[in-house]
Length: 249
Image (cartoon, rainbow, N blue to C red; front, side):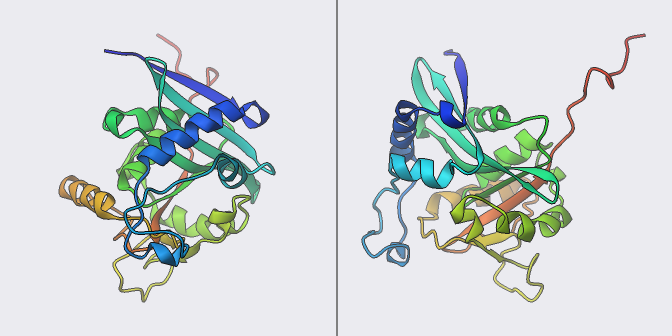
């Protein structure tokens, strides 16, 4: 079995070559536009692959005004996945927000997403967040940043969502609109913790994944609406320091 190698980069260390490879992985593996793609841009057509330029990746997902991180996993010298994050301070807490998570389709269900997200973690992080239309991304975040879906606290999402999103240096996060019964008690759409991002990607694969998750566990974030993404916010789990570690008898 081939070994995975994790590479980590921060800020100015994220080279153009690294971004070029990231764009290639994204453009070939992320997903396709849905039937209402024209609501995002009139130039988009249903079934076309969702694509991203190198400049847009740096500008919108690794904003220069933020403390940004980038990690990738290589298998046999091939890039098989990457994740981006940016950090900012909100109410005296450090927020680490996952702005992109992509795993090559041939390497999924191998735990690579969790490895990537764990590679983004810092001991100084207080809050983690992600917006994604794919349940697998939220599951990976819950496992990497906490102890799984059972650790998701809806009151944490409710307490932090508005202030954290409004303070984000990433425009697509800042422009998102909170949706679901967690934020609007009279909401009857089936959404619980979601954001309207006007991102009209095809939901066939995410909905199949959501059905699978619901078949084996409780899914706290509700239904996935067209043009929307799930919203997950977690408080950082504490890593035990050497000072506080139990001493051997």
